Length: 90
Length: 267
Image (cartoon, rainbow over all chains, first blue to last red; front, side, top):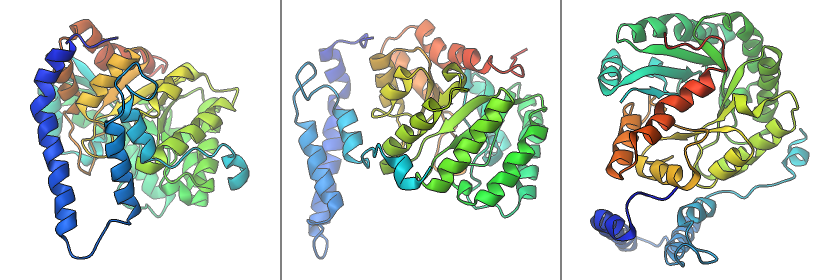
């Protein structure tokens, strides 16, 4: 079921909030960089970088596009272990 | 618009919240048994909690014209204590006679451990034996995907379970498809940081359609917003969706699912 609003209307509605959220992320990363020491090797920083790469992927209709939110969710999830019954002895 | 919040923990909310929900159009709530923020030490602690859910909250809700329904279990977090869990599970049948009980819930997993899975399976036994609806909690954050898949594995492996009588809650973008494709009901929880915003819930409605899909606030003792379902209604209206579509998600669907319990009636 598509949104009743077309792409241009959706962009009009969300442009400023996306801009604001990008600024928040940029400012947060700057804040981390300004902190004493470094967090560059922290696995969470690597996840964040990988998440930013997902945002740049192709739009819907292409092989890896259109489900960026789902891809981000998987990035921050432990993968499914199909043999869990065996490892937990259930 | 009249709506139903199918997952909210009113024992954690002040009476003013009942008044606010009523003013926002809430006509019924369903309250699964959950973790109180601390591990209870005895089965008697749960007996008192079940009395609160089956005796006190329905009266508190009725003062504001809201029907209160509930679900019983020992939650996944406290399920780590298997012996306590078994005492609580043994006690559940006596409370199933209460007129506002819809079924067993919110059962599920928290950290996806052996003990949690063991207690989950024993809850399924109670639900099957007493022909109860089932409401399922899926884990938080990084554990959600694995936990949801484990839950679907366990449900799918039990031939007694009628999938149309199971609501799998707290679905997000990476779990909703598998839940719906397997024939279960799915619930989206509107928590701003750790689960789903009204905007993302509206996106999922647009992507997956309104069939077997509900939305809830899961308002509780932590950061949460008991009026989150009206926020979703507002978001869907802003996008231009019809009242019929919105009503299906926030009113008709809960009624259809809850009607699987003989205890459910809005009259």
